[in-house]
Image (cartoon, rainbow, N blue to C red; front, side, top):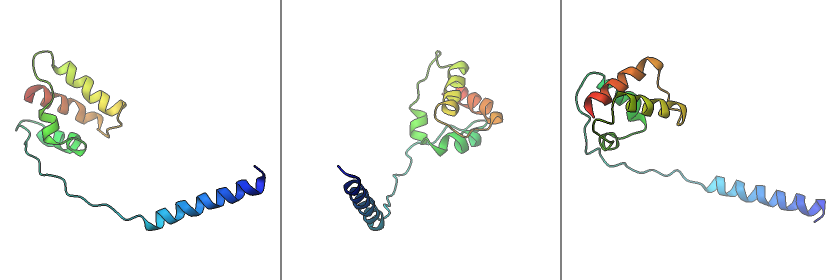
Length: 105
């Protein structure tokens, strides 16, 4: 292909993308209501404010339970949310979240 053909193709692609963007319409949808409520306890508000930004109460309640899901487990999970997924959790909230999850689940 020569330079003129490439420029023509690039121009056509730009025009096509522009037309798609002009005709794009916002999509709205209604999420279903939560069917679960987090257990009451100390630091519930911190968990709702941090974890609830990405996770529903249903999701949080379906997490594993039992002796092997100790404080160390929840510490690792919260750390993963911050380091891997970029959760904007303040360092001072981490122990509060871990304590709540350890006690509640």
